[in-house]
View 1: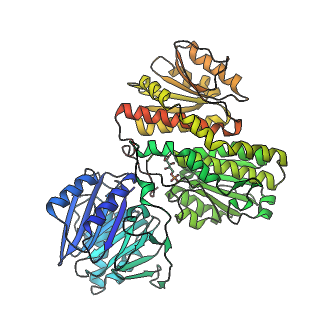
View 2: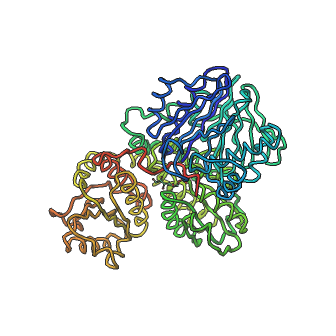
View 3: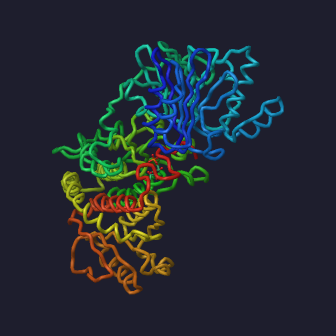
Length: 610
Ligand code: F6R
């Protein structure tokens, strides 16, 4: 999604802005631009290539000034062209914007009537001209104009605005899209994400929806939507630059796959002890509420939705509570029935996904008793708006394809299920201790599973030139098959579908031929007998099988079948462990296909528009 950086300082800001944009690249974008102000003049550079090219342009043409704004654009209104790239300029004003102005058509028509004309197809230029018009009506008062314009706008936005006539201030505002203020010494910043500003500060103020901020080099003034001053304290970010570098790895995705043993250990840290599961694992979760709980609803998008699907198996099995899972973009637009004593769970790596956030707000209005968010980003919107938070502690995830965030989400869901099952005495103490003992081995088992990397890399060679692929799993491994298919398609661009293996004969078996690899997730569990029958159905039709499983005599070995051996692991850990070879398969297929692994085409890391 779009990324914003802004700076007001006593030193040149272009290097800060460009470095910030580089650090936002992971969010996904298709054009970028920067605008600085020096001695009453705007200096603008834009590109429809990478931020690296923008840096070269700025090195050649120079963007002087101690005030500036910059942007990476993920196209929504109008294609990825230089004209549509931000910053947009109109006379004395320059603006960057993340989000969607829903009533831009109506506003544009009104502005055209009073003489405005537009160069781009963007909703951003409409907002800019609206602010300009309001400034004419408020005798040049930029702050009053900004409030007046924002009051007419419907939709979501994070914006940064500068005025050639006011070189001492940078305005920013947020409504439904992330924005933080970076607090410096005699310099201040804004950005869509703290990662953009880590080279210049570790102190941040998280803006809330409706807030507007006016930054000077040594002042920060925050206002609510009515223009009343708001006091907010800054907080120190625990993130460091090391955590957002590739280190010895070729790609962030590869690094993040290999970080999983440590990430899972971090998820467990302080939550699991010799005494069992720490009831404080989820801040404030109240025992009386858990005892009354009758239903659980999980809502999320993409990979996080797949985590929710796995969570349903665990929650129903370990707590006896009816659990349902829905895609956020569907949930938010239907009339759901809410039972008393229901818990609403959102799952999100970023904590900013627009559909998930809208679903949370809807759930609160619908009367859910409590809301819980399983999230990786402290200070994010979902975290701030939920009653309870269970942090995944995966660390920064930069690769667009979610890897360690997913496996740590799974671990949180498993711990949550055990915690609720224990609290409600649905699980015996002995069962809880046995499960926790197995869970404690997870980081080490994850390390062992990662040793299949070379074997998976060799296997990936056989996917070269393939255009379609099926992933099969049964029971709790079915959502893992869905996740394997999503990983493969999003980074290697091989079309892939995940299926519950029992569904094969209800349609997809018609697709089986020697050009369609069939990946089977086959751990040794209660359903293995049934899965073997499905494997035979594929073999009988000449399909090419790629089985990930624990070696057993149930698997026939022939030239149609390739087998990747995965260590035998406790059943409860299998969904987490079997995710790893599928991540590696997607990664190696992407390398073979020569795609942009960390920033696959058309995708964004943090989906802040619906
Ligand atoms: C796929 C992927 C996406 C995200 C989805 C939700 O690898 O990363 O499908 O899972 O966009 O994002 P979050 O978890 O940030 O809400």
